[in-house]
Length: 444
Image 1 (tube, rainbow, N blue to C red):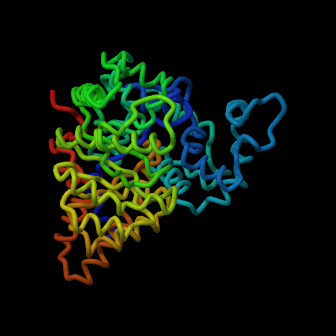
Image 2: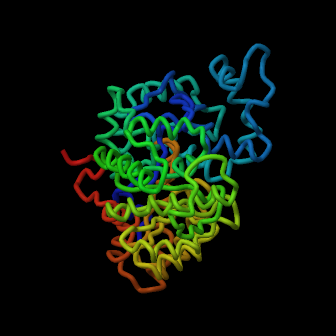
Image 3: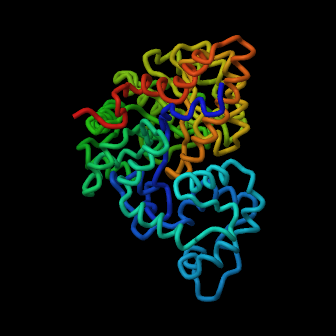
C-alpha cells in the first residue's frame, strides 16, 4: 500500500468528547458540553484551552507538573489568569513540563491537530505566533458548529457520536442546540444512574421532576429509565455508554428485584448490588432498542478493569452489541471476546492519544485474529483539534500495519483498502445504523 493510500477514506468519530475544554466550562454534573445541548464558549477560547485539556493537563499533574503550582507573578489567581495576562510568559513556563511529555501521544495528537488545522507547530515554541494562534482559535470557537463543519470537511470526518449525560436531552434551550443536533448523534451515559441510591440525591430528584416518575422500586426505576431513554431516542441517541471500569470490576451478576434496597443509607454490598441491578436494567433498555452499549475497558483501575467478565453480559443480551472502548492493556482478552461472541466489537478510540504504539499493538494483535467487521477506529478526543491529530496517527499506523499484513497474507491492495475502509468508517456506520451519505445528520 502507498503511504497516502488511506488519505481519502472517511474517518468516523465513533466516541468523542469535543467541547471538554475550559472555555466551555463545567457544571455539577460534568463537562458543560455533555450536559447542555448546544453549549458554546463562555469566553474566547485560546491555545491553552486546547493544550491543557483534561487528558494532557491530567497527565502533567500525574507526573508532578500541576500547572497551577508553577511560579507566577503576584496578583494572578491561577494559570488561566496568567495565560490571559501574559500568554507568552505562561507558554514559556510550561516548557519544562511539556519537555517531559513531548513524545507522548496526548501532546503529539494536540500538536499535529493544531498544525493541520492552524498551520502552527507548538513543538517549536519560539516560532509560534501565539497571538495569531489565539485569535484564530477564538474566532473559530466563536462560531463553534460552523468550525466543526469546516474542520470535519478538511479532515474527512464522516460522523460524530458523543456520550452525554441524561440531563442533556432536556437542556436544549440554547439557540445552538439545533445546530448541534444536526451535526452529531449521542449515546446516553448510564453511570449517573448507578449513584442515585442515597436518600438525599438532588440529581435523581431533578430527573424525577423532569420525567414525572419518582423511582422508589424496581417497577418505577424501570419506568424512569424508559422515559429517559425514550426522550434520548427522540433526539437522535443511538446507544448507551458506561465508564464503571474506572472504579470497579466489570463483573455484573444479575440481581433479584426483591433483594435490592432502592435508596437510603446503603451498606457497601447493598450499594454494589444496586449498581449491578442498574447496569442490567440499562442493558434491557438498550437491547429492546437494538442500541449498542459502549463500555470503557482497561487504562485505569488495573487489573480490575479486565473485559473478561463481560462474556456473561454478551450471552445474556445477545441482541445488544457490546462495544469495548480502548482495551489497553487487555488487548488480547478483548480480541478473544470479539472473536468468540457475535455481539462484541472493539473500538481503538483513545489509543493514539494514550500512545500511538498502543494503537499499533492493538491492530497488530487483532488484524489476523478478529473478524474485520468488528474493529472501529474512533478518537475519544476532547477537542476536534485533538481528533485531527489522532486521525493522522490512525491513518499512518493503519497503513503501516495493513502493508505488513497484506504481505504476510497475500492480500491485494484492493482487499487491504476494503479492510481499512471498514475500520475507519463502514463498521461504525453499520453498527450504529447511520449509513446515509451524511451519517452524522438525523433524518428529518
